[in-house]
Amino acid sequence: MIYFIIVIINFYLQSPAVLVINSSATDNTVDPNHITSVANKEDLTVKKYQEYIPSIVENYLRDNLDYLGYNTITSNPSGCKIWQDQTATTPAIHSLLASYSADLKNYTGIVKKFKQIPDLLKIIQKTNSHDICVTARPHPHGIKALFPSNQLSLSDSGYVEPLTTPMRHHDICTEGSRLMTLEYLVHDFEAMCRKLKPTSKRILIDMGASLSFHGEETKSPQPIVELLNLYKKFGFKFDHIYGFEVTFTDPKEVYENLLPEEYLPNYHWINVGKRMPNILFSHSSTRMRSNKTWLLLYTLLFTLYCAML
Amino acid sequence: MNSAKGHKLNPLHSILKSFDEDDFIVVKLDIDTGSIEVPLATQLLEDEDGIYHKLIDHFYFEHHVHIKELAPFWADTMQGSIKNTFDLFYGLRKMGIPAHFWP
Image (cartoon, rainbow over all chains, first blue to last red):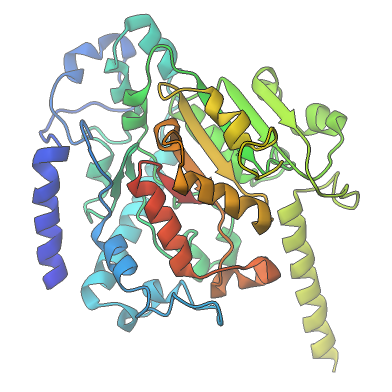
């Protein structure tokens, strides 16, 4: 009960300083040429924020790390228990997590269906206005309207997902194949758009680029490619991408086979570091994926061996 | 790549600092080598020159700490606790660097 009270207090504390609320609407089909008529109306999106405001759930977890057994290096505590075991936290927190999970699932579906919008910075430069930013809304009333659980945290770049275990999508608790999904991330592209200046450069510094662009031919692209595609869909095209990688990779392989052509004009490949060439995996997959593949293979072989015994 | 402060091959020094706060900057850190990536993340948190929090708009980092569900994949690369992760990510967010877990 106390957490429901805190939720309500938190909402009202946030509202006057951070949010401006009303019922104006736009959608993913808004014509950029007619934005002016709706852009100045109030809405549910971030207009001004001063400091990081974590959600109730994130605050609870951070305040109870010892209680949850998360302050240890002598064992591997379960990050999933907060989602699966009602007694791990409190009934109120468990209920908020369930509500947030439903919100996140709905948000993921809407993001998937979102139609790509034009390059936002180019329009800001052309119009000297941020009115175009409303087209980056995933909901007519802004991203917050998609999360009635009120469990998004508010950051310097707008709303973001709360920090929770298992430090990935909680779907991995029941579905191992979701290990590499990015669908637990929440981006407030409208707020990010409003931070852009006409002179802004959009930069991605990728430390650990490896063969990150590999995967174009697979059903599941590498996470960094998925992230780039997400940003592109919401009107963010990077002017420069700096890919740092410590494992030697043949530049011919990088530029001819791994890097999608659309990124060639913007990509800087800096392949220096301490690692020796990884010949075994250099033409097939990323290092991390290779490690995981071998681990799974060893596990499978060990299981078969045990079964034969 | 080198995590030493001020080193030419430290991207936070040689690349990131060449931009300014009007730019939109995303940083991803996932090199699976704790001896390099943890110092880099710590440099962001310490932000000695008071510049990183003004530059970075989103930060993605896979922090290998002791956690059951990821232990089979991280194995001997795990260092620190989940609390360490929360302290790092919350600290970054609080200082103005929206930090996210990276898969």
